[in-house]
Length: 231
Image (cartoon, rainbow, N blue to C red; front, side):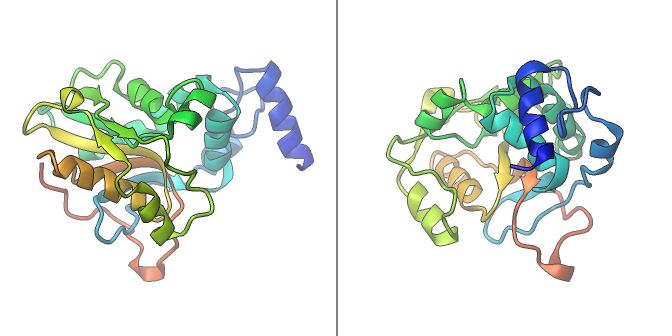
């Protein structure tokens, strides 16, 4: 761990009102970290939903997510959700209600983090927005492995048959549904979530994520918005 990372970890313990990215006492983002957040993009996800990401999985955005997700900084849900607000406005179609459905975490991971961190993001994002609601129909079986270090095939195999749908928690029939996750890497999770919902008649043709960790595709990487997915 470098000096900067050590300093950030120490500040996590003693100074919750700080920059989400670096720990400097300038909440929610210092000028340097705000400038380093990057810009929203539409990563290419063959066979998956249309995905809008706040930025790449690097720099202050990555640092903030790790502090929130792995270091117990639940207070960072609001500044991270605020970053999702602009991209969300590009997707939603008022006056129709948009239902946010979080990609589920492993039960053991959620317990260790004091709850599902993506669900917490969804709730912070929906707060004060009467046209945005949160549903939790998806559950991940206990036997699912941690996906860190798995390639695309292994991630798909890890999720196969392990996503459960709770019918009572589904959005209303015909509702506009938006999947939400913290990071998209291979797209296996978003594909599996969309497929699980489709099996019970729920369409989820778009997804919103904080960080894009997909492999860059040069000129094929989207620089603008693709055609809006159908509701």
